[in-house]
Length: 114
Image: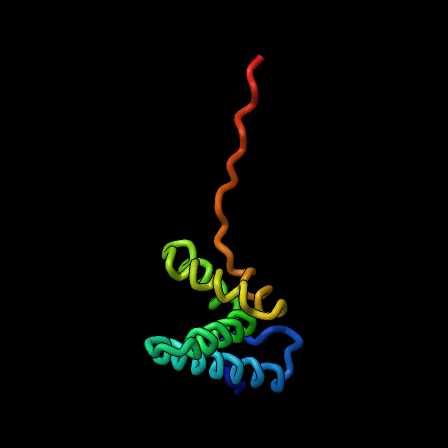
């Protein structure tokens, strides 16, 4: 009898890739929690830790990316904070944060009537 996991494993992913993904999620969660707790200090280390933890989580899990996108849509302070983090991050990290930008409706001009 085979053991059936409740978490579907991606097709073609080896156990090593799956273990690396789980470790990345754990490390990203730890960095994010540490960043939030240190954010109340006057030094900006908390924001750096929080942003790096979020980048790790977003790159490891599409579910986290979707949650961050929803949070940025609903809460303007979170969106502003992540926009600042994008500006001061290296390009590779900023690209990951930009992938969670909320989709804003584009204003399209009405057709001109003749």
